[in-house]
Length: 394
Image (cartoon, rainbow, N blue to C red; front, side, top):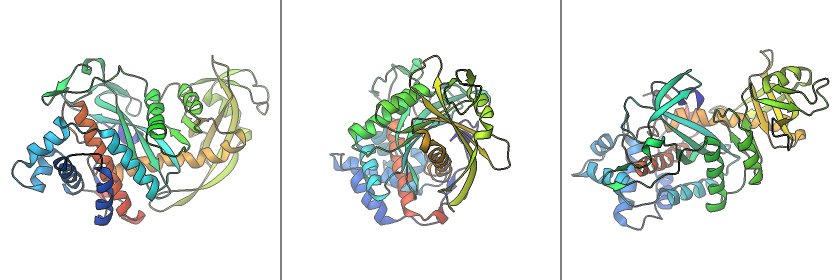
């Protein structure tokens, strides 16, 4: 989501051209709200989900209440999101379990989501540097875990980073849970993967992490320790120690990742794979894989993979992976396409169902909103054929 994650203005909302499948909505809703004990909470959950799916434009509580109608609807929806007691984690687990059955995941993808804000009143707003825009933004910063199948990508779990000044905030008449101090996004990625596997019982799948870390190798090591095959996007200036004998004259040298790959130019080989999209296409790239170790921690070997276009300037992507070197050169380019698939699904579906539209000071409210927006995303994705998801501006 790098293109839109750091944008100074929201991406134009998209909409699908097909119709929602009522059976998908009903089946998912029944699964989704099973953990809500009270019937009034289940009703409000259905109302909120329908509002996210059917309200044109911004998915504010006021706009959704106007569409749904009924006396006191806005107040009821506000209470359901901000003041209620229902837990969002069981709802996310139910969504994840449903998707594992109907659209078995090929991989988990971790991507950031930045939500630009004009004021300081929304929960978690702080000053963040956007490498995409090259400037500091006033924004919320979150990171999401997505399930990517051969059919679609759907967000399952979210972590909202809170600057220090937000840690004692109460809102909507009740205290929000006191979150832990801010942590690196990589730690949040590992925690979300651990929760998905250990607490939700999801099957282990390769993890693709692209969150703009200056040094993503600790994240790679921690995911590997969890027993997960994984790959992380690597910045070109990350210092690494060359250990691959194939890179003649460079073994033992500490060099930036991009310089290592430029030296590996002669090791490039063409790799072709089928990439998922509205119209799946075959892609071909030149790929080189070199064994390296992180500096200064010279422990376990890591495979550095460079990807570049045929006939284009060498080196458009850099990844480090725990996959065996014999697999990395073919698997990494294929799985890097999952990031593009997530970004595309975010723009064509998530934006349309209001994933970034929550406004309020409630930490719990933010999490409940994005949980139901993720469910709305799943309804749209599973109701539509790939051709339906070719979005256009609303």
